[in-house]
Picture 1: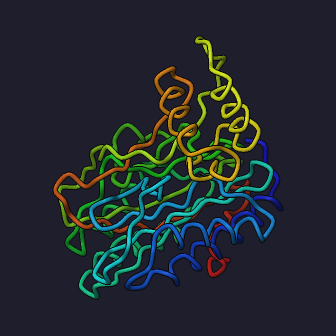
Picture 2 (picture 1 turned 90 degrees about the horizontal axis):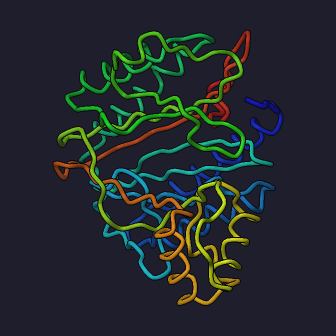
Length: 304
């Protein structure tokens, strides 16, 4: 990976602050749209850009919900809310998350994910086996009586690429036994814990997309070409949400263009991910920069 330590550390600091801001706004009656827009605005005001839309996933929704062109989530005050935030500076990315329990009932579920992440912080080192990370995560979650979500993983990160190829399972997957995180690797670790089945499925709703970097095979309308050019210029291959286009394009035009660009294989959709047993899901996440002689947890000011 092309490394600029200063930019990675700054992006991590901003992402961590935005994550904590978002979590502080999670209160009964709050709007997901208002919170996400405040989080994304904070990132921009601090000199970075969102690396992906603010995720605001509630209860059994484990990941990938962000408010769309019309929809929103209003909190009743009994939810488990995951705030997942990314920031980048010139394509250098930080990815981080935390969970808030408004009900007061699921604190042990939150503790399972948080303790798993803290355990990873304590063992992370250059050349660590991915298998050992998964083993540590599952042990912390299971000893508290919960299950890791087996088909949600952490991931390596490259410049301008949020999911770079190597997955970090939340359990000791034998396929990762010989994989090591070498110096020069940037990796997000995100333990997901649940009181459900321990797997997620697609939930249908899609408000997040990313550009598939290849030349279109099909002829585009003038509006499709204009929106595609805008996406390429502003987001490159990073995930975005159609609501970010509302200042520059008409709502109906955005909807039609997004549908067409997906059908033509130009945009990749990210449906919301829902726990298969309707269990509650908690998530905590940090980004780790692995160097030759040390590891920097870019999104954790306490992990120095």
